[in-house]
Image (tube, rainbow, N blue to C red):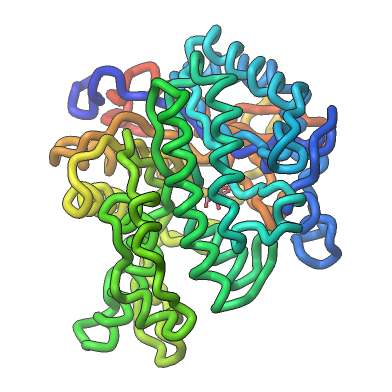
Length: 453
Ligand code: BGC
């Protein structure tokens, strides 16, 4: 094997999941409901009426899942904590059984030699806090800081990498602007408020963490690079707006202390004048950034509300089952853009992966998923290219360890490198999982080899 694709020493090879998508048993052992429990139980809001009541039953099968990760040779695992398992009302009373679940999981990971990356918030706000206005209530910064303190006090001795929020853009765009995700609001006036409060909550949680924690804390954002469909000034302007809205809206305030000016142009009278003091709270020193990357967007102005830029389909490209163009170069471009814009902060690719149609599990327990292998291989090479170009990238997490609940799309999309039979909860490592294990074992060198399957 050549060293052409060897990764730096200490580079973490992992997989990622999120509580609501895999755990199941959302109300077990004294947990409170979250906005996702409610949303999924409202008729008509999710594909096929699917809910997270069972999901991958990870809440009961976590030991087997850790064993599986060990078999794959993973050196890191990114998971999220369900806030309302730990604090059933969101604030105040701690539920020891909820905390214990994560404590045992962390112990098992460490025993298996797997570094835990803990995300505090992956979209499942306690329903009790939504009743108080959720992310629209400025008090959310204090609520989130309180929760961060509880978690850090309990686990900081063992968890060394913490994440405040997963993808604030999706939380706001899906939850408050377009309504496809919980809590399902569609309101142009609410979206900027939710965004801003999420960032205040992020800042407050980092501050709270610094008071009790001794390790590293960062933020995870999804970045989708925007490329103009043509040289026409309208397309260029639409691209700039789309980029500011999706890629700069959260990183700018978190790292530079201000919003990109395009947001006022986009939201117009719905974009408030924010109190200057808020930016001091939002802009906290961070130890790393997590970048989630799936696809790019080729942007064309479509003449309606400035936000509504059309995406141009690429005739010769491959598209995933969620309709996303496979574009590995975009990951290199993204990582280099982050470095150019925000400086040399350590980066992790905290999610990258694809849903493709998988054939049923074949005799002998094989799932042939060559498109996913091709996707992961090309994106890992793209990460390597960014490292060669000087980016400080410290780890890569496949989305996802297991096939799981794809939010409102229910169980209809499979992103796992491990197949889950939802009727029996049987796990079967897909070809992509076997291939990834080989990449991990060779510390990247296998990326230079011809495809085995
Ligand atoms: C989210 C995951 C989700 C994945 C695929 C990311 O936006 O963090 O929870 O399953 O994308 O859609």
